[in-house]
Length: 194
Image (cartoon, rainbow, N blue to C red; front, side, top):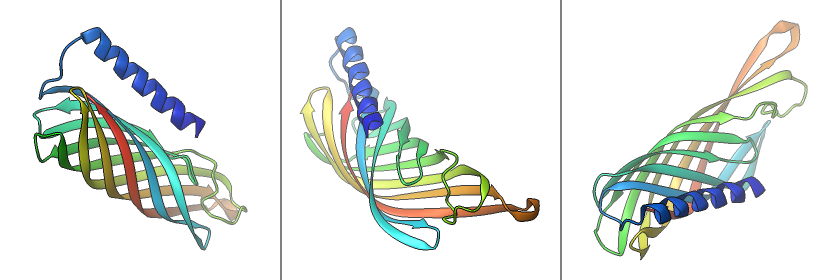
């Protein structure tokens, strides 16, 4: 949780510093930064047992607004548990209205790198475990609320799909592979600076 708060603080400081140096008013096109705090709710497979859990995560997206409606960006994030992953993804957003309150749809799609040495097998008997990550996909719908000329508050609800692969050396020098699929609801709050 400390890492998430540190990442959020650094992102906010960097964006505030850039805006203060530029001294420009926001326009309908240009650079944006979006920091989102996520709560992913769903089941996680540990061995042969399904465990329900809520996983806090954070993502940071930097991109370009092509108009008041459409933007694209690249994002990175961190999901700390139960298997720590670091998603890297493309982000596509569409804002319906050019007003202070507008519906928004978004899509994140990319790949999550997994931290090694977490036993995704659930038995504890395998050695030399290597987690290799996998694809991630996150469509969202929600609302944007303008806070000022250069910042917006966002709230979204979505579906978070994550795959994590794992390889382990077994008995008689045999390699075992396993894939875990995570299907979760995602709730986010975010701050967009433009």
